[in-house]
Length: 120
Image 1 (tube, rainbow, N blue to C red):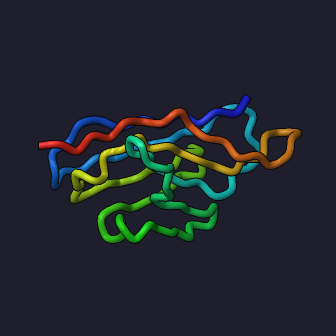
Image 2 (cartoon, rainbow, N blue to C red):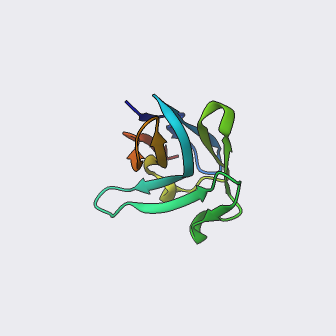
């Protein structure tokens, strides 16, 4: 069974940094685009950044220049380096990936999320 597990969230002061990780596990044949999304209280879940298996990245305007997405294909892991954090970055951060399980079809998987709190 394929699953995504995020880690690295926590409490940080404005201007600080955090690095999120998301590891895919299970009987995986191939992983396509991976990404990070976030959801603040009483708001919709929004795209933060995505990265293809070839390394092409895409960012929300609100995080460009501050966040960097990367992946380690050998470890089936995607990262989100978050610098110069702002109060408005506070949210639950979710990992998403398109994965083809061994012997199966392509499906979209979500992690359970990791909380990021930016507060002074």
